Image (tube, rainbow, N blue to C red; front, side, top):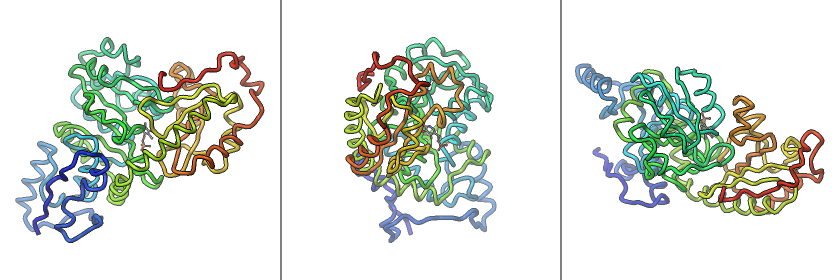
Length: 402
Ligand SMILES: *Cc1c(COP(=O)(O)O)cnc(C)c1O
């Protein structure tokens, strides 16, 4: 049967979230998307297959018809890619086994052209920082602040990379100004924290929009995935890298991510409203030194405590003390011990990841229940000897204007 695959005629994120990537279902007589777990696809026409393989090898264009082999592509994963591309308003998206596999593919694609230099702004997610700093893929990185990006760019610069809001401090970058400073060098924006519900970096000039789909896109803490939304030309190179290096997303993960996208706008807005209320209460609390919350909003909150942050982690009960974020339930963690442990101590400190900082991913629980848990976990003992640095005097609230 010829399926009608005309892209859904809608602009709003809410509509796209539930319809994009599912346009052909009614014509197929289906309502829920099918899961195709095939690793291989039969064909009695090996001349035709040869031509399709040649075409893919030469261009990276997704083959028409069945994918030949599961590492070239998968129809269930393709639905998620189509939907995410619509949500980020890019021509294409290419999905990977994890956020780190997605970032690795971007670096490999650029390094393969001889461009090995990366300009990056701290903080980044701890493992992204590590991948660049350790040069595991042969990158040479120059760290700078957003104002220094134009000067840091060299003839061999492959990429400019930022997160906004950044993990874990929620620091924001003016993406339009940054895109301008990048000139012809591709700007990669990790949009994991904001999601396309709050911000579409491609509209600000980012050529590559990266997600750890493990977080908000999946949204239920039960699937690892990564995705790069970009123009079709870059997507073709990413598909070639994915085919040759094998960091594919499993079809079940593709299904779960497409399912997660459907509720992304309502989840992000509901959790953001709760986060904003918690920010107001934390900012007014004498046990809290500083609260970080971005202008763009969102469901991530970072705060520095005057009580020992390790005690807060030990005392939460409703909130789960765990790394990761973006799930339906709330998580809290101590970046200096966990998510950013792998970043050298001095680099952590200079990019605002203080030893007092806690990062909370606000879920869909009731705000009063969350506050009761936080309030109890913050305790009553202001400053432990180890943490006593006279910070009471400099207590400040860093909201929006940060
Ligand atoms: C978690 C995370 C990553 C890495 O994604 P994985 O899916 O864990 O590989 C990249 N960037 C940000 C901002 C993250 O939070």
